[in-house]
Amino acid sequence: MNKLIYLWLAVKTVFCTCQPDHRTNDFKKVKAHYKNSKIGKLPAVASESSGLAPGKQPGTFWTHNDSGGKPELYLFDLKGKLLDTKAVPDAKNIDWEDLTHDNKGNLYIGDFGNNASQRDVFDIYRFNPESNGSERITFRYQSAAPDCESFFYHQGSLYLFSKNWGKDKWVKMYRLPAKAGEHSIAPGDSIRIGAQVTSAAISPDGKTFALLTYGKILLFETAGDNIDFSKPKGCFRFSRKQTEAIEFLNNTDMLITNEQGGVYRTTFR
Image (tube, rainbow, N blue to C red; front, side, top):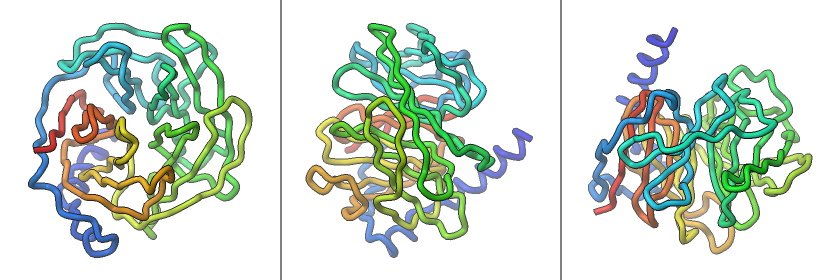
């Protein structure tokens, strides 16, 4: 089954281009301005990296495994060396799909994967690796629950993006308060993208956010303090097998990992 999945992904990434986005959403062509380099390999314990967030020390990052993995986070350096392992208290990895962080040292783990469309209640764990404290943010969708693999934190809110399995190609964005408790959410914006969104991240200055897909990266400018799809900034190809996690290294460069253990840096030139 894994071989069939990898073959399907290979075909998807080979034929994934930004041309439809240039035409439909007025994305700018930025491919020539980015250099993609493999810089490391993840430790074997993080064999299905599906999220990224910065560690306390510069050049370190947290990651976790996909569905069915242990409820643990793994700290590694840019070469992929394992530095630490943290178990998340009172957590279960049903389908952990992405990781983000706030400016207070908290990490947010998105247990919201829904490949089989069988879930209707989802959790996000807020975890502080210094104090080892954790809280649970629980939510439901007000309409049919989509599959979701991506989110980021911005100014007290979590922004989630549907994966876009459907034939209509629409990606929906949801806003969720980053507070423990139970919540109900509805889409706040949407955009038509011909690729599955697998991770999201926002730049340190809060002016740019990125959506990672199988085969390309889409960049948007933020509209002041608002997060929406109104200002497409750029699109460029990134074909590196099953890419599932992205994080900004600074306001332009990005770190990306795939589920085959590769660590990549995308540098703006």
